[in-house]
Length: 304
Image (cartoon, rainbow, N blue to C red; front, side, top):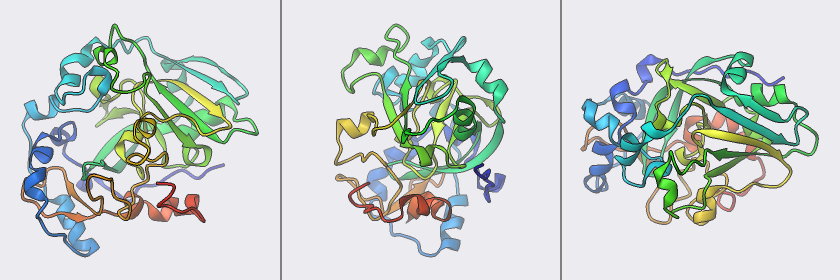
């Protein structure tokens, strides 16, 4: 049986609630920040992570990424109210002993929900620390029974054009898809998040249930999941299909592998202000001790 994860982060590390949903101030100042120098040493990096400036309520509620509701940063907050999240069900199929369509309520009654405080990292070079409420994905997979031959877990987001206006645009090949290797999915760090700060996840952040894989870039954490499939072959992943040289299937946080259009070697903590110093990006987003063994013997430049 897999060990349960115990975080060494505390509430002192958490990105304040009023900063979590918004990146407007950070991204708007990205040009000015390019010339900022790196800070050295883990102690200095921790100090930088703790230096945060508050954002306004308007900022937190109008800047999100969820292309199913539009590509503009304020589109999800304006449009996501149209998504009906109750009732909600998830189809679980493929190489499992008990395939079927499970209601969200049934899933929640069978798993252990707990609070996890995780660092998160985005390809746009910002980071934050967020308290999620959720359950280990392994708990759900063990309950449906993973069969021999399953090597990957595939995920799909809801595909409801009447409720998700962004689906009318061909910016991606809908529905949104993601995938993990089975050992990644079963790792104790990997959770299905159902809440933030003890509240239900807002629609624009992936209600009612989303994936969180903290050692990977944020786009790997698929939102508003309606299907989970256990499969033998590597599944489709939307951003990987869109541009494989920019978005690898594994999408692990690796400061030595740059995005083709920007460096991934440093990052800025949300709330640090427009002129906050950058800090070095940590391998696997700071979870190297827990997950490095998953990739032993792999070329992490090739399998980025």
